[in-house]
Image (cartoon, rainbow, N blue to C red; front, side):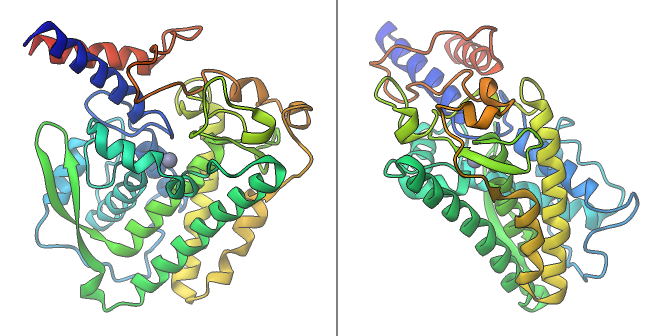
Length: 349
Ligand SMILES: [Zn+2]
């Protein structure tokens, strides 16, 4: 391989590694930590008493084709989805695959073009509880939040609609990407898959906002489209923080609470499924998604103790390699190390 091709490949790989982690809690791959996956599994476990299942009243169909089981196995121990009960395992898998979907769709996290399409479109921002580029000032922030809440509400409604389908039709084939293998079609339980997709947005509402000290109220919504020197935080929103996406590091205590909120989300969602009543879901919004106006950049988000963290390691250029690569932050972040390992792997192979 020529040196110019190698440097282009290096540039692409570094960009891709950064992109894969650029807009959200990290998604698992051979080179990244399975953040959304482990948060989802932990929320599912916390949503019911040990030995019980959240959907125990539900007759959940199991597919004859158990490729899903091998895919779950491939996600590794970091996800921690080990269940003796096969139905619980299948529910967990369906939730986890759903939680991955807003970030990766049917693709590899290292597919730069697909990742760019998925993450850079203004219409995609609400699934990650982020602002669009026209969500300016306080009014724009409130619009962004309304859309984020709308994604959660409509996700529950989709899960209820799936649940109302005949039992055998609730098994749906979903295309997913397995590292070093490629795309594969696997069965999911569609109500749980829809809930997993929605759980992703709930999780991102913790990593992409600045909240009150107790993490119950949202004070500010961040922006992953408008970064760099032209960003005006008062107008555009604070630039998305890579540090906030750490579920086992700097923002681990936020991730812990996101797990609790996720467990609550699943409990209320299961009531909505059982009772066919999406209004059963209202207490979830009251507990975890209330908006506290009047808290902005100028007053440090009403003195939120998360303000400094939210300003740490802002997203920089991730696609355009003509721009300089981001400088390492105060400590060598795992994403930076991932990018170097990935590039070495590519250059040596
Ligand atoms: Zn996301």
